[in-house]
Length: 82
Image (cartoon, rainbow, N blue to C red):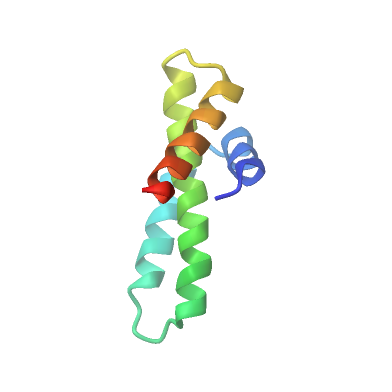
């Protein structure tokens, strides 16, 4: 997860574009010939896209962009620490 990447995705992509990309990456990970390294890269991309989608939802609910980005970062870090 990289907050600058999530910010870039949020600012330059619609939720619909992010959802479509997410679907493609998830399908890619299901192919038999995909290596573990490729799955790790796709997984990182999926996390960033999900973060951007969550930021879109938070901003739509009235949260400031910076606060939404920080909240997502804290949520992920909290989940990792468990």
